[in-house]
Length: 124
Length: 167
Image 1 (cartoon, one colour):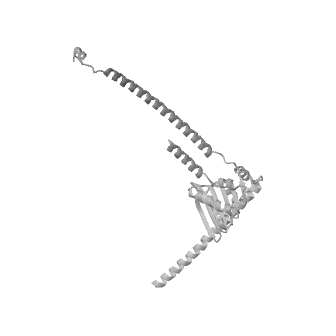
Image 2 (cartoon, chains in turn yellow, cyan):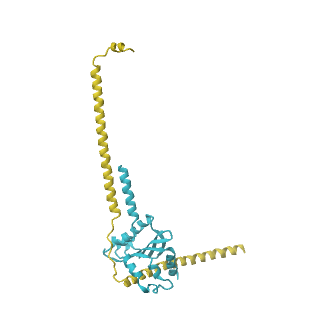
Image 3 (cartoon, chains in turn blue, cyan):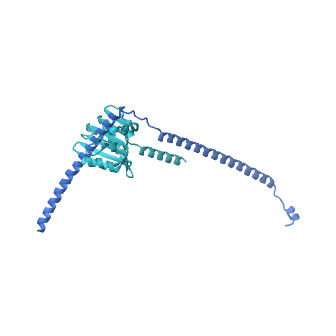
């Protein structure tokens, strides 16, 4: 199309104003979107700060040193005697458990012997 | 993000709960009515290890001295308060349910019950916990003794203790 032809095209009334309004609205929309992006960025940072604070709080909670109790004894000989006593008690309790297991074992042996006896009687 | 924070929080809480043991039990019941307590610290165990005759003093055929040298701390609770007896048993059950403690032995004879739990890392026993209850414990009174030992004890040492108990 020649330049002359282009110039001959009739421009509808108000198109220029419409185009101007359209460009203005696009510009406004872009500014709104930029503001939204900026706001979202700020929210993300607040999340990060919140998460960091939570993590710091949890770490403090997790690695806090509970109050150490005070030693009951000041003399190592007394402490040793107490440890010996505790171990003797553990050994005794373990022993009672082992005795029970032995008693149960004896009963199982008696039961097994009875079954064997019955089986032998039947096969003979 | 909220989900992530909740997840991290849950993870931390799980780790904190997992780490519970005899020390926490001791701290919880220390100084309460009807509770006698004994604590032997790692420092005291260091001093015990330096006692010259520790090798000589042995428990019968089994030398306790060698075993004691592997200990880092000991917590003993003797509870005669019915309310706490029930509570401590539940606390131990909860600790066991979390999976850190393994049941080594359970013996029930009439009104007395003994539970022995250990925390094992490979061939090393890191924690030993004995819960001994008399007369059923809990609702009908009775008493409970808790002995908790932090140690770096070879499993073979514990087996020797068990063998000596069998004799």
